[in-house]
Amino acid sequence: MAMALTTLAGLSTTVGSLIGIFYKEPGPRYMAFTLGFSAGVMVLVSFVELLQQAILSVGFAQAHLAFFIGMFAMLLIDFLLPHSYILETHHGSVGHGGAGKAKTGRLQKASLMVAVGVGIHNFPEGMVTFAGTLKDVNIGIALAFAVAIHNIPEGIAVSVPIYASTGSRKKAFWWSFLSGASEPVGALLAGIVLMPFLSEALLGWMFAMVAGFMVFISFDELLPIAQSYGEAHVAIVGVMVGMMVMALSLAILI
Image (cartoon, rainbow, N blue to C red; front, side, top):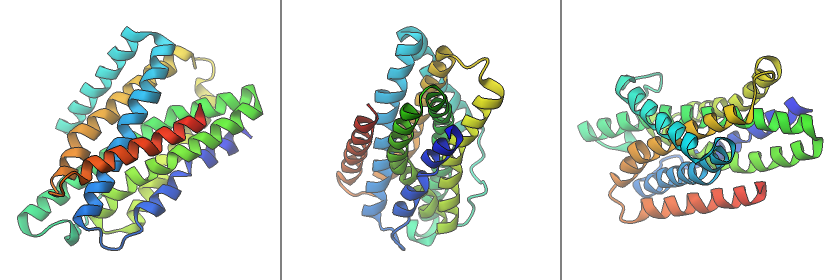
């Protein structure tokens, strides 16, 4: 039961991915809005859910230490990560000529970082849902439902930049699927390996570091790219809507 609930919750990211790749030819307004939406989702879940849970688990000082370690770790990865990866198909609708290729390259980079960030975020969520179900099935069902609801906008956050940079619905869908699949993997690892070592303090550090990852990705990658489309205030409206949607999903969780 614990594995089934965690798997269903994690794979709800695929619902978001289907929403995110609805448009055949995403234009600049759509891209500015949806990338802003993705950033809003990630910033709000980082500060309101992940960092707050970490503070409750390990205290203010340790939680913020882990948060900034997460940010600096992502900065280091950003320097070391090559700018060409498996998302190598260029999509002409993103731009034209050299500028278009440069923007596509930035989108490819952001795509990979968002997918990794959401996947890492889902990993401890799987552990929490799994542990909650073992403690009480009703708690597990409530947690799985709430996680499933707020995984939908996360699926959008993963699929939109991938689809925009590659033009491939299949790649957008599968990367979103894989980011959600990390949730049952986290549950399986918790059940087989980490259960003797799993503690509130360890989860607190993990949540805070993931919050640092996601805030860095939002401010360094998603928002600058969203603003580069030149659509006045569309990106910030996307941020606001993304935050409101994630806040609504967290309200269900609370």
